Length: 409
Length: 230
Image: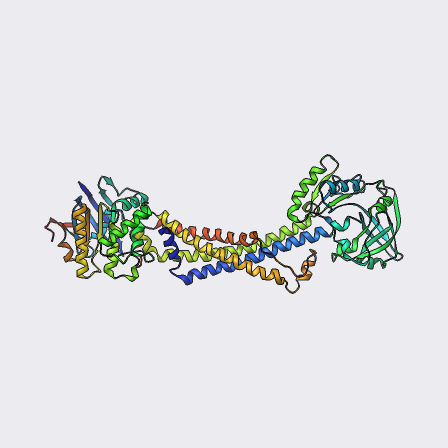
């Protein structure tokens, strides 16, 4: 081994207790960082997946402007053939056509304004969790049947149940009056209040008849195998519909900007906390290295007298710090991964968590998963700040004068 | 050929309210291959003169020349290069790097000089054998006696065969036998390699080995005479 490396390594262990204490601070912060970042990333993944799988999908094909102003006439023509073509061309079954209308749903006793979705009974279960969340009755099974599924809260509010009739009133795509009576065949419970209170689904064929859609709809919903593949899928979809200038493809972050903003806000506050933690560790390293440099002033004077330039001494101090930081990074990342893995198996929760995360459609117990990024992102930042903290002690050596340094005891 | 030339050197230190003249218009020429002893009572200015010659301290006025180079106007980096390439230092308190073994201490300076590892190893083995430390290469300073540590310090100072060796009280912490061995070693190097030695000491035993005795008092040279070495 190179003598300078050897020297740096042995200098590190001159005061092993102090070195271990500093490394301990790094390891502690790194374990926290690995766990917190793993938990955060896992929760964001869950938030996104759960929210998207409930209804919106990873992306949607719509008419331009529909996203911002959901007017009935901003339609996707021949929506079912388009969905079928995309399924064929992209070799994916997780694609379904939908129509949407605002309407008044009336039972014998009450009326509520709701969002009525026309869906393809065969394909909707592949892009949405709602068909699997039926608590009473059954899901839709005939594309042209006059039937509907509604959320638990809406059923409670309208005081209706399975087999009851529901009257729908609204406007057709041409502005004409639309009305129909449909049978309630199923009641779903997603756990998301907004969905369970305000949404109903009916077969797309019947929906098109009621609202005079003439084969049109408002969106084709696509679900990627996972979030990582959504971007690639979106590019393929855009290419597939590029021949039709009346269509646009929106990703989940555009469809649900609130979700993205919530994640960004959470990340900002979390990173602020992480920043404080990292700075505290950096100060601990600064203290250690300053002490280390001060107590070796005499020795540094000697080696300067022998012909070593201050820059080389500075590099020696940086090398010592890099070694210490590297040990802290590796031990911290490994310990953090182990710590996180325990929660991967057993789950992580705390009192009150269930209520807090239910707004994001999250379960009350989260199973964080350590990835290479979550294992090393935080420790790498700690390592870099550790190096930065050693710059000042290293620069102090430039002011050292050999004779004065050698007089220091 | 002149190895060291000092012209009208002045250096004043402030100690409390007092100004101490460590060098007072001092001039001296030392030829290559000389073996010079600087003698003075404590505070006579010999260490300050050594430091000025070694580029460790800059005089307030005057000129210091090493061979053909004026060094009192050099930058810190240039002085470091000069010391690394041309000057070997032996200090009173050995001043070895405590976490390195005897061999590593000797090799350290060579590594800084950029000498390849194999050559470093060979040279360090040879020089440690020459100073009588064969078999102690792997010992760290704390595991060696004062005499052994000083020999390592000497080996470190001379391993690169510098043209000039500056030694400040090299025998101060050594017993008489070890002192004699060290001075024999210096004499041998001086005679066989024409290395110039300037030794600051007030040890009467050391001056017996010198070919030239320079007596200092209050920063001035008060006596300068050649003598037949022991």
